[in-house]
Length: 257
View 1 (cartoon, rainbow, N blue to C red):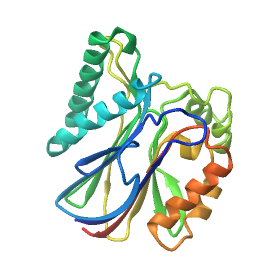
View 2 (view 1 turned 30 degrees about the vertical axis):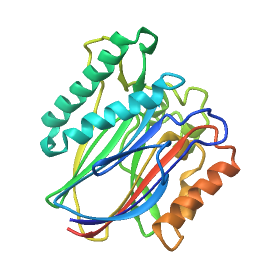
View 3 (view 1 turned 60 degrees about the vertical axis):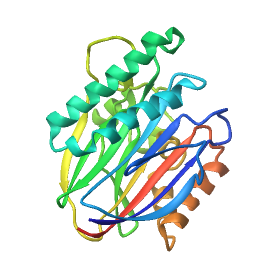
View 4 (view 1 turned 90 degrees about the vertical axis):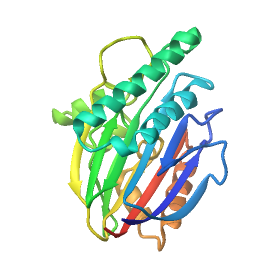
């Protein structure tokens, strides 16, 4: 499968550190690494992309997001169905528990996870938390993943609309995340398989993107000519609005299946 991929991660204007990490096939890219934005062409049978938004305070959030992506990356060849994904998530949870056990001040560190594996003309999507995956068709974005959050529950019950999720007072309260807390309970996982064809495009992003811009504003940025211009357009708008959170994005286009 041949895929054109652009990625971008930015600390924003308010946070002291970037707790986001992104996985671009076999490479985990935290903010401290450079280049922090790039465009790459991949041609492989299995391709894996993911974003993770860490939680846990100074230095712990990025440790959590990188740890989760490391487990996912090392398990890419095992991903074939929902049961495989559950096992991988379980292993990631154990790794976070181990960190919390060896470093008591790390208890409660955690991360979201949104991943897309491309394999045999299908996409395997697995997701926890409120990072997102969108499909992109003629500059129109459609959200594929479903947030694990209280505001998503409000949306599902018809009490708010999609745009009100961005500014609601409880927007950051998650109902599922990967947490190092010793608890045996597994997080709720969103899992879906979709067919993949030439021309399909996808955007993975952390909540620093969608909480800053409406869907209409994000779509306006998609009219740019190339992938990196699209991402830079989003970045410019988020920075204009204050960029109160870290933001990370991966934009994909399927060139051949």
